[in-house]
Image 1 (cartoon, rainbow, N blue to C red):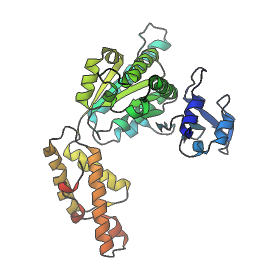
Image 2 (image 1 turned 180 degrees about the horizontal axis):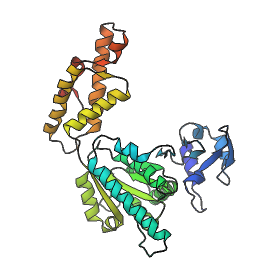
Image 3 (image 1 turned 120 degrees about the vertical axis):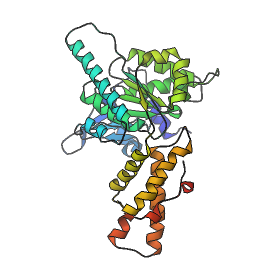
Image 4 (image 1 turned 60 degrees about the vertical axis):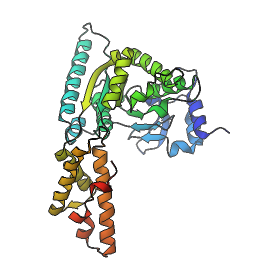
Length: 350
């Protein structure tokens, strides 16, 4: 029996020339109604498939973007100051400097091109190297908006995938699927998490098909497509050293350092602020101690901000038990985190 997702994918895959991101969209009028199809023949398909009305589209003020593969897509905001958002992230000082240098280079390239000067076909692809929880996904989303606002890409959306999104189980399927995703990302950023997992030295692994398509697209799409390969530094280093074709297409390499205990503490306080909690002064002492203990984990794949999220979630769990068991209902009790709510390191998933 054919699955609905299979219908979606087979309908979007055709012999016609592949379209850009906005071709997977419908225009909205001032009332927010879908009035003009940007597709040439998809309106009936849209209205007949409730999937598109729930899980497989993303929406902005002007468009509804159809998602052919239920991908994770982050859309740029025309009203957001991308640099303010980047600079507002805790830590990542060196990453911010590197992104700024990248913007200078891209603007320089653009000015030379506009002036009619000879220039290389710049391939603005990236390698993001670092442990989990160091902000690679978040920076990629902001990067899409920076590139869009700088005019480097036409749409600025960020399509986030990993091996499971690209690699299929039969010969030929992986190449088709990877090409479809690349076409959907065109005009923006294709972010491939744990990209090293695509490269397997063993013959017969279908990841090689995905790598082959990616290398061709990274070579040919020297404008209006940016690919970001992300993953652990050591594993990514092996990938880049073992495949000269990929290395030659990476123009920008950005290293994401682990957060310091002080930065982890600030991230925790940011979680509190974002979720309307108040951290009592007495709770700061055991919390800072807990953050300092993270340096002793000696775990090369320590979760950084994800680990802090686990600490925060465990804190709220303990707080909820305390407040509920004592029948505390005042607003101050529902907001204030006490030192007894801070978990021990043994209670936290790394």
